[in-house]
Length: 112
Picture 1 (spheres, rainbow, N blue to C red):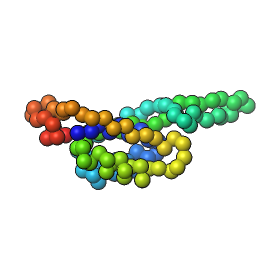
Picture 2 (cartoon, helix red, strand yellow):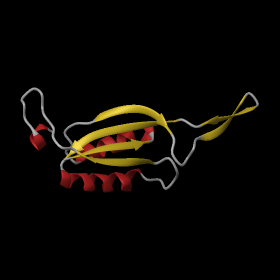
Picture 3 (tube, one colour):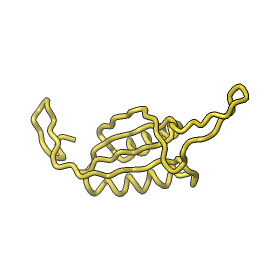
Picture 4 (spheres, helix red, strand yellow):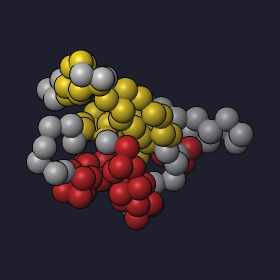
């Protein structure tokens, strides 16, 4: 199993949710976060003064999928979400040793 952490612009959330639903992902968690990468934010004028805004709103989508589904999902997300501009986001892929459904005690892929 693999855990996917998908960091995207807030306006791409519905696209990513649609991709995950189409790939039969059984659950996901969404967190609104702030951060920056190579983009380093932007400069904005406010009442005649320049302000550096370096923490930008992002959305983190987390899900756990089977090993064979992970690369396919990542490929689809990159294809559909990429604009070619800084700030499109990142996908982090982590190995998951085990998963346990608390209600039933099921383990492994049966639990996801």
